[in-house]
Amino acid sequence: MKVKKVYALVIICFIGVLLFLTFNKHSKSGYYNYHSEIWADKAGYYVYLPAAILYDFDANNFPDSIDSKTGNGFQLDPSSGKVITKYTYGVALMQLPFFCLANISATAFDHEKSGFSPIYHWSINVAAIFYLTLGLLFLYQFLIVRFSRLISLFTVLSIFFATNLYYYAIDDTGMSHVYSFSLFCIFLYFIQKTNYLKHPKVDESIIFGFLVGLIILIRPTNLLFLVAFLFLDHTNIKEILLRVKRLVHPKRLVPMVLTAFCIILPQLIYWQYTKGSVLTYSYGNEGFNWLNPQFLKSWFSPDNGLFLYSPFYFLIIASMLVMAKNKKKNGLLVLILFLLISYVFSSWWSWNFGCSFGGRSYVEYLAIFSLPMAYLFNKIGKLNKIKRISFTVLVIVCTAFNLKMIYSYDGCFYSKSEWDWKSYIELLEAPTK
Image (cartoon, rainbow, N blue to C red; front, top):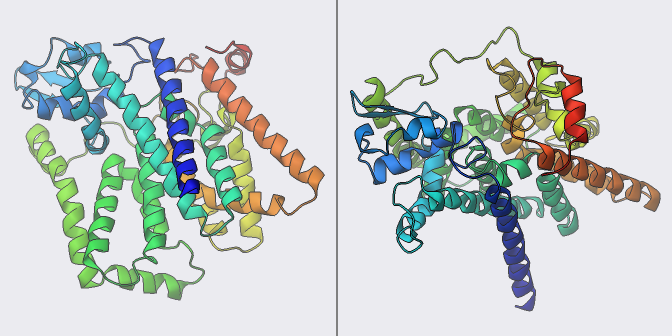
């Protein structure tokens, strides 16, 4: 009992520190600018909440020019009365409880119940910290089945502090990545806890369907993670086919599909409302250049290159290679997954994903990248003292570099060239904020 109380106290203190960090960061940024929680993409994800709860999805009921004031992440069409956003509503659904609390508390704290006053911005910060903590806890529980508690804890903390997950949990709290990360961690824990759905149970199938539906709804490209599930912990085709067979068992498939459909249905209704069709591609002319992926730029460009902002990813790749070389389960799978998502992300028309910190689309996949990382930590832990200390120092250096970049970064890489090393060096030399 005392141990559980200590764990609970540690978690509460950890949450308290995270809340301090995010509120301290945003206290300096103000509102209605590109640093705020409801701006551009973030506003596009969020707008479903005020639209549904406060304004009956009528553009004419919204505060005047609020779409332009929040960076045009959504559009209000006064002629048709439609509220238009290209983003799916998954993030808004996860933010819903916190929006409701903000809405209830607005009067008590003397804030406008507009959906856009400061208290609603604060609720997004709280939501991000809640889902980050939830994700880290489930990831830890997933890992301790495979590794020691110390290795699992070291892996979880390293993944948070040494990568751009920190940025999207503390700074850009309205973006989708911390929410996807949390769902990925919960999904991994759930399938392991249920022995990969080996026995068809209705309640497990409903939970599975809910997670699958929400994961896809957050970001459609998250489907790549779900495909990886078919191969996780398997080493041959026979085992994979057996998992597929179990997955499509009628007692599992029917409740799973129905639950996933119920989660996705509101999105189909929304597309019917805005586009006149339940199936639509809401991103317009934005798409993928499949024949011209920008791998090198995506990985190494000063303009949001993955490895240049969070060099800990070098260690993650090294862990994949070591695991694959030693022919351990999941080593080759995770390496192939990394290459596959790299191909998809670098093929996007805007390979740098605009104003972001490093390769932001990789953030959620840190959940599954934790497997080779924990494997490498475990191997290092068996080496002599000097090598262990040297590796620990390397992790600390990567963490310090990541945090230095985050607290020097202004939210965008301002340059007309993808290979502007001068601006990158200036960013390295810039004081923290």
